[in-house]
Each structure stands twice: as C-alpha cells, then as structure tokens.
Length: 126
Image: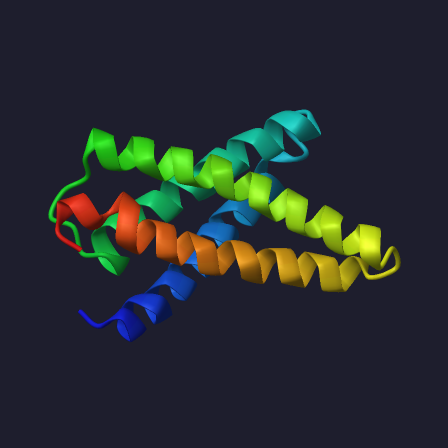
C-alpha cells in the first residue's frame, strides 16, 4: 500500500479512536467519577487506535505483543512531545491557546505516523 493511502487511513483511524474515546467518556461520565470515566475512555480510544492501525492502516496479518509494546512506548513518548509543544507555544505566546493545541496536535500526529510506519509496524512487514 502507498504511504499516501496509509496516511489517509491513519487520519480516519485517528478520528475513529477519538470518537471511541469521547463516546465512552460521555456514556460513563454520569455513572463514574470523571477521572475514572476519562481513564477508561482513554484506554478504549487507545485500543481502538492500536487495532485500526494494526489491521487496517498498516495491514498486519496479526497483532503481536512486540507491536503492542512499541505502540504503547511510542504513544507515551508522543504524549510528552504533545505536552511540551503545547507548553512551548504558550510560553512564547500566552494567549494562543487554540493555536498551541492545533500545533501540538499536528506535530504529534505527524510524528505518530512516522513512528508507527517505520518503527512500530516495520518489523511486521511495513
């Protein structure tokens, strides 16, 4: 599959994972404490992202424990990149809350695709 097609699928998978996160959060927010609802919804979004990226975006034949660990490590590091990018923009431009969020999301999204394509799923044939 071409990188362009993978990128389009990656963006769609990300949207689906965010939808899963938000949907589960909204279902649980009145039943559980907010932190618990958000924690569960975040994990559900992460599982959706892993499965979609594994089987649909990067077309792996099967999931692997090594791929799951790499996915978790990459996402942990990418969380740091997201927070640091957001904070950095706000240090330079304190009123640019929306701009900081958008830039942090774009940087993290681009790095996610690169990490997933050439590290997380590479050993399995991509």
